[in-house]
Length: 444
Image 1 (cartoon, rainbow, N blue to C red):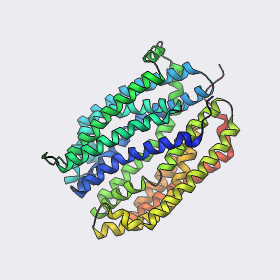
Image 2: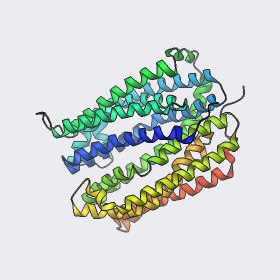
Image 3: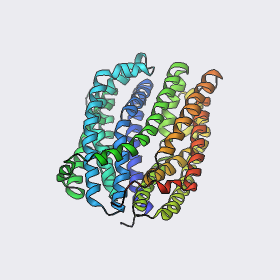
Image 4: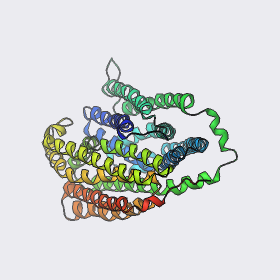
């Protein structure tokens, strides 16, 4: 088994995640110079996309666990078979999802409460980006394969290239530079799609030249039903947790669209894009920890996985809270990047103070849930998510924001309570050690 070090794996994932988030940030930032509602519309459309792409995480998430455990157990062919299965499955489901979005984009957006200009802008964006969603599905599988072989720098380089292309095209197409017409939302959609096409091609070329051979697809004959069963057993609970999170966020967005003011909708969009950069360290450390945990559990080194998981969590928590506190200190300046509207700035500045508590829970979840998944323990986090996201996050948001009239402040209090409750439950689970019995790879 390779000697996998946390920060050796985590720093490329951090840069990749930061740049991937920056793709969305740049979209919103450039559109904020075009129209505030256009910026909020793209954010709304992306939440709808997030729900549909959950199906990709069923296989990508499961393949991450299985590939890392098989590599830890030194079963290279089994890891390659899982890789092939992941790519094929995600390509097929991605194609189906693209067709569904193309046909029902307006219906989906209307269902979550988009109206008027928001519906017009968001459906325009979704019809283009959603139509090429299969690219995101394939990229998801390929990135997981490359990362779990310890080559986290590769997907980082691909994301750097995508970011440069997306940012350049955003500025040129949205704002209509060099004599081109101002394309607005359609410009963002074209930029996003074109950068994904190039990213998929480059990542595929590297994967099949340096990591795997195209011949791995022969390993799918006969169909490896035992692998499919393992992937479903691991992937469905993991995906269900992600699905419930994104669905809860969609319902909360619907609450904002239907009950809160336009200023609060815009505030939520801008704060969301700022706070993404608060927790990227936790995301990267969590993903690196999942790889390490999977390798160690596959190699039957559960005690080492336990101590390294706790150490990773402490690093993530310290870094995230430091960033959140810094963000709170410069809260007015951060919101002012997007808008000069005093109402939105005031809302956003106050939310960034409340957000400190939320980041404590989120950092805990991002790292420890990733460690539990790497060990093959996927049912417990999902069970906690089902209760917490709906009883605390969704119901709490409606109760505090609408019934008690606390608006966006009530919404953020509910979100923080959800993250903190689940964070405490994950600490209890990791320290309890029951995950040590959930190893997926057998010795046969």
